Amino acid sequence: MNSAEIQRQLHEKMPDADIRVVSNDNIHFTATIVSEEFTGLSRLAQHRMVYAILAEDLKENIHALQLITQSPEEKNDH
Image (cartoon, rainbow, N blue to C red):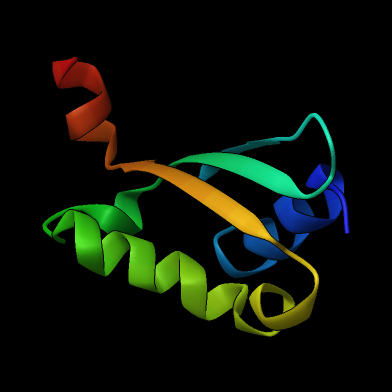
């Protein structure tokens, strides 16, 4: 599992999102995702959405995943 594979999986389910996944060791990943689908959702709900997409890989292939999730409105506020 590498950053590109995780990014591809997320893009398949969230095609309109701006997604960046990085890792220095292909074990610990950081995913930054900006999506309209997150509008109105709590941070917990946003993270649950991402975890659901990656559920199988989180069981075996991804040791650690840090998420930074935002709606476009949240991104523009910062």
